[in-house]
Image (tube, rainbow, N blue to C red):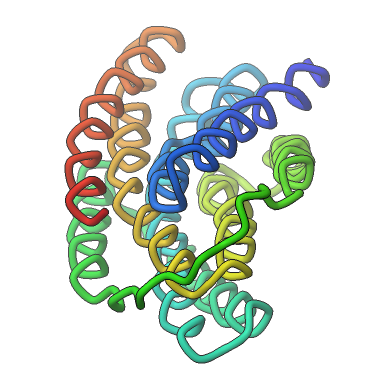
Length: 251
């Protein structure tokens, strides 16, 4: 089980990173909207804590998307005038502020999804206009192993402390933008335009994660684990395909 935890999420993150290098920062961000972190963590919580705990964690993770999106828009605005580390601190501050505010919130998965969808639409309309991109080096940044290591650490840590944190806190923490931070920083190194494009792609892709988590939270209360994950994945793929149209239009 430990070996499975250590290897599954990093492999998924590596595939997304390589795809982003081929098709650009916006596509990489869009792919990060997939539940590559929360999905494996909730799967392990299902195996270790049971379906009710996993359902609650999925609902908490759904709410946590609000904090994740807050990081994206905060970093996007700050990187227009600040360095990458100042932008990162500002983004993390926005994430934790929203995450703490969400801790006492108790709503159904359907209402959580509605709240997240409205917030994401508003944020996409508020996103700063990306400046004209500069030329960049064709050599890829050496961050692939860092992304993979981060994935392993997060999955093992969050599943290890889940019983102490409870389902809602565990779920919200699965939305911590670790991979998004790495993508934003390395994109920012190549130019502000690439960072803004990547973060807008992430925000657009979060509709996929929201659909996956809402479906999973509801179905785990009525169906088996494999059926629930299959149903949630099918719904997420439909939304991900639709959101690709938005990304292509932006590009």
